[in-house]
Length: 287
Image (cartoon, rainbow, N blue to C red; front, top):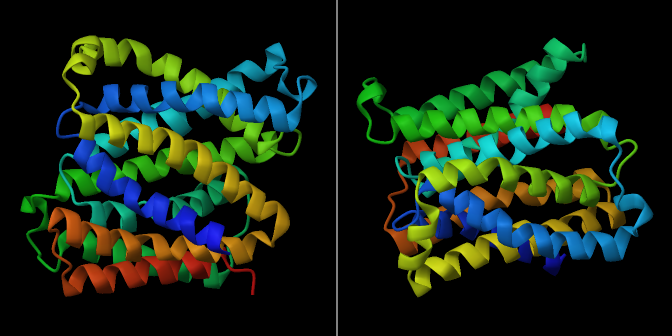
């Protein structure tokens, strides 16, 4: 349980480190640097844990891997990082939970999965909560300084939902660690031309010690260590028990963002965040 708590703290703090890194590294370059560092480390771990035979990629798997890389790495993190230039770490950590709602909706429309009344209630409650967070209690929410960023975070949640839906069948025959490793690899390749357009080579020369620490934290701790521990926990415990820990991330992020970034926690953010998390819980829970 202590390892899981450590993972939640690592992921909660990631929003702070992204905000700090974005002060000197543009979004595409930040995403490229993060995953170009994370991929080789994760590849070595996957090779050691899964074996050479399980690491082989069949030609007919490449389209699926490409979709997973685009939705779960390239598009997801570019929209997420761009969003954090305009919104707060607190808002982002709450709104990204909408991915669970989008997964349920995509499964309903494209996979024919039925949604019970409880799950529809969870979806509606979550969207009401998200509206409260985005508007911050104001009817003129289009003019809120965080509005563009909040919408982009919701878009990144849709990309994560696509990744989850596409990966669902694929993970029946493939280990999650192997799938993620190759998604990281292809996602990094897809990010390369965009990061070059941003001038990543000249950006690298100007990155401060704080900037590099942020990149290394995001790559090593968030994308490698936390992921490996998370899936180890899912193997050892019931997934539903482990998933409950995810609800603590917005709380820890709010605390860190308030202390280190000076972000304000308003009553509307607290209420909206509670509704989003409760709605997600309703949608996810079996009972």
